[in-house]
Amino acid sequence: MRVDIIIPTYKPDDTFCLLLQKLQEQTFVIHELILVNTEEALWNEAVRKYPIEQIRKELPFSSRIFHMTRENFDHGGARNMGAGYSEADILIFMTQDAVPADERLVEHLVHALTSGAHGPGTPAKGAVAVAYARQLPREDCGIIERYTRQFNYPDEGCVKSREDIPRLGIKTFFCSDVCAAYRRDLFEQLGGFESPVIFNEDMFFAAHAVQEGYKVAYAADAEVVHSHNYSVKQQFHRNFDLAVSQTAHPEIFEQVSSEAEGMRLVKNTMGYLCKIHKPYLIWKLGWQCVGRYAGYFLGKRYQKLGRRQILKCTMSPYYWKRIWSEK
Image 1 (cartoon, one colour):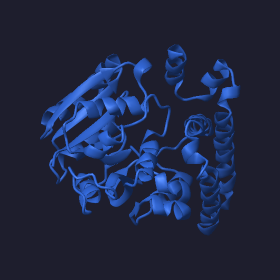
Image 2 (image 1 turned 90 degrees about the vertical axis):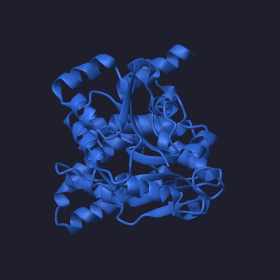
Image 3 (image 1 turned 120 degrees about the vertical axis):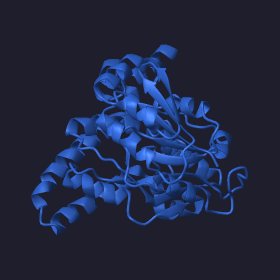
């Protein structure tokens, strides 16, 4: 089986260099690395500052880079573009700041995707369509975000199907393109990623796959180091875009509640902070929740906002300008 790695890039840095170095060490043979970069000028600036091109030359597999403009970028379209240049059986999408935790990342993802009765070329109902990796916190990760990583990415893997919706709710469709492997046959059969899309292209694909009778695997033994210490303002912008994406898919979010899962995370985090004797951090959690909920609240009602207000709330202004220009 051929496996390609597809990574959208934007101002890559030293973390991206480390990612490339870690890909060299993988036990499973990678066929090709495909980079979909936003703004060629910014790529050229990055390669002058970091040894990106030198590391690319040392890779034991081929790599290609394709450039696009910020005006044309969206999370689904950029990844579809990368997939269009690949002929591999398995497509592994990663972000530029997700660093493999060990040399068996690709091996574990491929195993999670193909260990059932249905291998590539036989997309029968019940096959795993996508397998996503566990995200471990970086060394500089704050306590609250560190717990969020554990909440969303526990140490035990699972395979989720349509039958799990009553039990897992929105978590049935949870998936992350920070690091996830897709069967090419099912990726194409299900139409790839939605585009243009402001957010959640991975979750929408997973929901579509589950609703069509396929499965989503969480490969807990496939690990990448990835986390963010978002400010309250960044949480606001992120959740605004999250809510906007959800309003476009009532067929998913009217049958399962994302708000309920969010409340469960908040309650569990408060309990955890008390358990580790750091209840004073609850005030920080509270401010984060204010930012998240305010963004989510406005995002759900974005159709009532003016264009200037939307641009102040979003973290994806080029998406909106593209949408408005196409109307």
